[in-house]
Amino acid sequence: MINVKVLKTVAKNKLVYGWAMVNKVRNENDELVDYFDTDNEHFPEDVTLEAFEEFMTGDRLVDNIHDEKPIGQIVFGFPMISDIAEAFGILDKLPQTGIIVGMRVDDAEILAKYESGEYTGFSIGALANFEDLE
Image 1 (cartoon, rainbow, N blue to C red):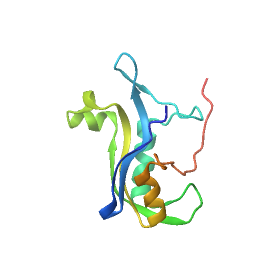
Image 2 (cartoon, one colour):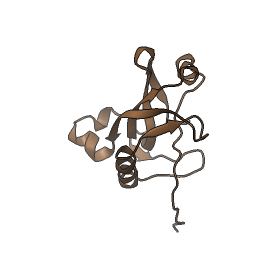
Image 3 (tube, rainbow, N blue to C red):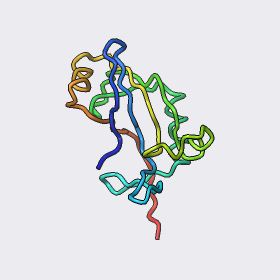
Image 4 (tube, helix red, strand yellow):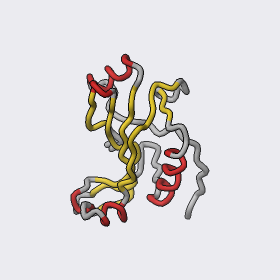
């Protein structure tokens, strides 16, 4: 199951809301455990927070399926990682932790794909340096 997903669209404002990054998910015992994506990669919360801060202080542009042609911009973003969620008193209510965003989509055709459900998620286009751990 891929948990990086769109949860709401607001066509009037051209906004799409959802989880842009997932770090932990609840398991069958209702515990938050590390999330591994379809490439079997896990991004720790501290690494995600640092990368997201850098992204949000930049241009925050988004493209369509990594084609590198801007179609909008992240206009809202909030790190909902464990310690922040705990500080807000909502950690026990969250199904997962990570980054929540609101993306303005200026391309009407692509916004329609989100509204229709054809597009159901976000993909983080980023570069990373990975280390093998034993």
